[in-house]
Amino acid sequence: MTKDQRHDKMKELAQKASVQKQRLLDEGGYSVIPHDIYRKVLPELRDKYDGQTARDCVLLYGYLHAYVNGQSGGDAYMWAYPNVDQIVEDTGIHRNRVSKLSNILVAEGLIKTERIPWYGHTKKMYLPLFIRKDDAK
Image 1 (cartoon, helix red, strand yellow):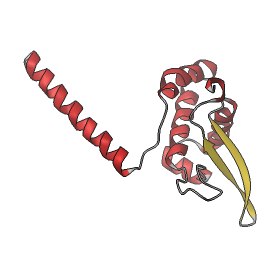
Image 2 (tube, helix red, strand yellow):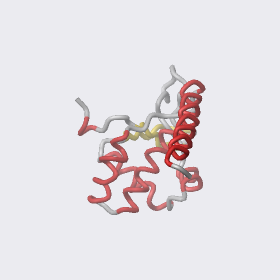
Image 3 (cartoon, one colour):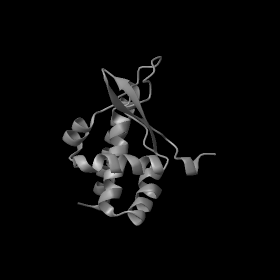
Image 4 (cartoon, helix red, strand yellow):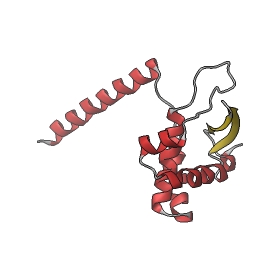
């Protein structure tokens, strides 16, 4: 493959990705994940804890964003409320790590949590933030 052919192929693939991105922006079904999560927070978490913990924290953070209630007007707007079984099944994170990872995300200012009454029990609610407390202006 010549340099010009590689350039044309890369340009074609970039255009395809751009069309896909615009489709998501137009149709919804996405959440904003700040670049700093990968560029700044992930390395900080790796240095502070370990690589697996850092990776799983970022996975849980993104997962919670994907499960945010987008229906405005209700009390649960912008909150996610998957249960531990759902998190474990969907992510492969071990059950005994979910609470620890959630606590790290709270301590790092990346999420807020609340327990609410739920059909005679309590349910843990997660509010994934977009700007962590240390970076807020």
